[in-house]
Amino acid sequence: MFNTDIRCGQCGRKLASGRFFELTIKCPRCRAMNHLKAESLTPERQGAPQPGESDGCQSYHPLAGRQTSLG
Image (cartoon, rainbow, N blue to C red; front, side):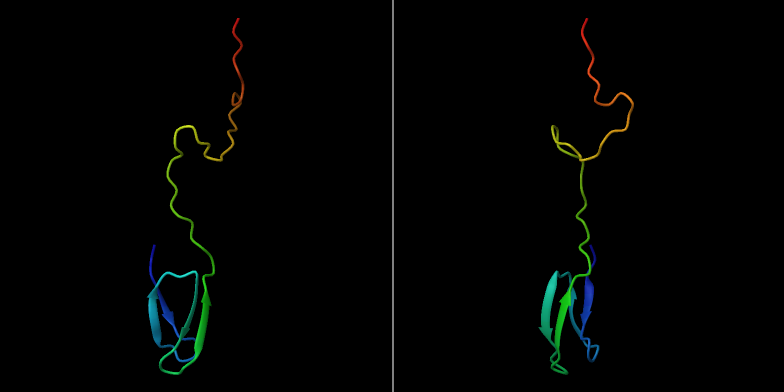
């Protein structure tokens, strides 16, 4: 992930740098209160499913879900 510069909406002074979900910070220069919320959360990078876990994807293979009969 990357860090974001957080700047005052009134005077443009850089207040912080980092990642945030929600932040309220007062600018020391112009004394404006800045209320910031993340526009969207970036999904964490997902790895392969663990053995026995479903990956949530449905298979569209013509033989998916069929069971073989013995006999």
